[in-house]
Image (cartoon, rainbow, N blue to C red; front, side):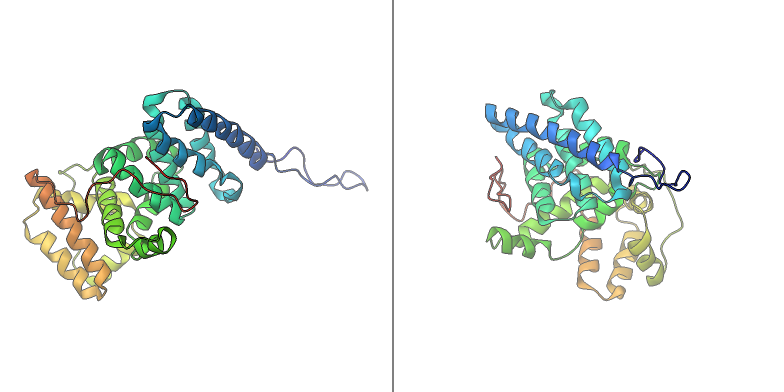
Amino acid sequence: MSTTRSTAARGSRPLPPVVPLRPRSLARRAAVLQDHMRVRRAVGVPHEELFLDVIDDALARTRGVASEDHDVWARLIALVEEHEDISHTLPACAATANLVGLALFDGIEDHTALTALADELGHVRLARLQHRYGTALETDSRLPVTTAAMRRMLVPGVGRRHHRHARTTAFDAFDDTRLRAAHALLVQGVDRAWTVPMLDSVEELVDIVAHGTINEWRHHVAMIIADPWSAYPGRIIDLARQVGTTHATAVVTTIVEMCRDQHLGVARPRTHPATRRHRYPGGRAAP
């Protein structure tokens, strides 16, 4: 409930303006949690620093959350409140905060946090945490938060934006990490027995890319995983090429290749050396 009283006038005297309570309540709860995060960070446990930073940075943007997203944000705050004193759930809270941050804000700090978490936890573990805890925050069976976050993981050119903030030339590695994180999230909960009508035209592919939910994408990925070397994956790659954008072709081709490698149990070589240290745009370093 976001108001304390009606704005309707009683008799000839109008009532005072309505005071929106929910944004204030969320901001107050977030501020309390931020204080707890900072106290915990002061203890200086190295393996907790990244997770505390990601959670703290997310909570700091509470006042910027749009009214239509208050339900999701309230669930995120409730998740952190429930687990704030439990060390082994810090990664889950950070992964979920990052997922929601990507969906609602899509700032460079959200993509930087994504790559830092992927390097710290590994792409698969990060995706499992985002899937397990993020799904519980959804307000719609179509998983709009996860879908929005997935779309933003796949947007081209973020690595170059990161390059301008962090003054690094490793933007290809940055985008590679984001793509791997997206693939790992995409295959969560996939059942190889799923079948849907096959995509058979450029228009169908463009439509599902532009308007499809992550659940729809997962059904098509399920058919790729069931037989990665069948004609269907090749057909999807061919359709992506016909779309006419280099990025669409690269993303579809890479996801198919990752599905094939996963089928064989082969780890694709990283395009950059493993690192566990990233720097946030504000200057704070993650472990």
